[in-house]
Image (cartoon, helix red, strand yellow):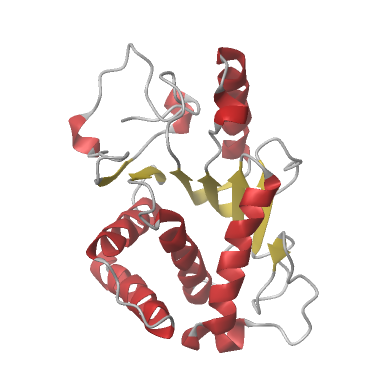
Length: 238
């Protein structure tokens, strides 16, 4: 399937979900969705999404995750946030979409053994150990997990980044995600910087790459870019 056809599939899924809610799809939501598909399909499959406050970026990411499960039921998704309670909100959002989207009726298991606050498992091929979606706080136990998509949703907050030592510990923790991600997997960060030395920036010695097109923040823009954690640890090109 071409990338254009794949993006169209995700657009249609998003439009159909908004129709369930009696809403129309804002143009910037389609821009976000196209970016997420690009990260999923384009090496190094690492991306940072910045967008203005209340832009609905987490909403679109949840729809993206549900559509990915619809298209590839074998996918394993790990959601990390600064606190497990925040990560569980994203799981609840994905679960709500799966339960109510017209395309997803056949994905809901008759016996919901794993259909809760912190993990869900859809109807899928047998033999997959991990749940379809599981969440943790960024400092929770993720040892032994494997994932095809890792979504880091607001891992940088004041409690995890208000000192240099905390930011260093957070970067070190995020480096471990490369050992959890499958070889062809993707990693997407959603967040707002909370410090000058934010994890969402390159180091001072690194020149910004203008081709990345990151323009997020509070100025009404939406942007994103790629990172290679093998080269830059958990720091992000911006």
